[in-house]
Length: 350
Image (cartoon, rainbow, N blue to C red; front, side):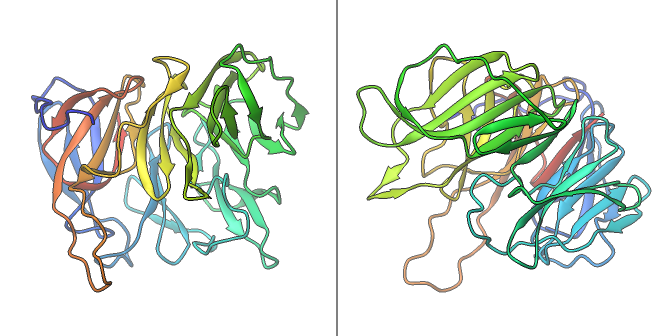
């Protein structure tokens, strides 16, 4: 488990930029900013005009030019907030479970040039629709009925279809990965990209040599299809005949690590140490929020709270206490600093 508690508190000026965050004790309502240079922390007012305490937020993210924030609310709408507080409420997406949604990229996610925003919508027939809009006015630019297995890259839309990758409509020839050897690998079920949209990762189920149970296999490439590395999850995804949910949530700028969803728990996955990668969180320890990378990609920040096992026998469970946010190395995910804010969601801006 990472030594979060042992990481020093970042002194003003040790890091640069600002952290826009939703406080843990007022989720969904207030937006605050923490200035890393000065250590000042101030309120920017309500996150959205119709927010309410306890609102569910998902996918809180900043545009690469740091001028916009976007997230999905508890009703399934995607919202975009400009720096002046003006709010754009897009047509409802969906938070409902859809058939075969493993591997879908629900978003919202900005294009590398900040001119487009993608999110996943649920069509009337249950089809997952990859929707691309102009984040300034909400105009729909494209709708792709591809199960939302697509991402916005520096060269346009990349799609995963029947195990093949298409970038801007052209089939991408993928170089063979050098290893490690696998006894079996299935067709990839998820496509992910890094913040700059210059690298992609394919996620598949596979069986490593000498092992019998299914695990996760991550293959990384550049946009020319050149192989950057194959990484296999240590251990198995199978628990009592059930294959656990496993998805990439945020791919690092270097594509050598990621934040992943393992079952229903966010985990940190460093790929670069060897062919096999661990998960830096087990089923106990402080619970993680979603990471946000610094503009230069050197660091990542995330909010966290104490881990609290689900209450047995049902009933209402108390909200676990919040802990200081932590700054990680942007590639290795090693803890570097703590930041004295208690955040539900964070976006690192310049």
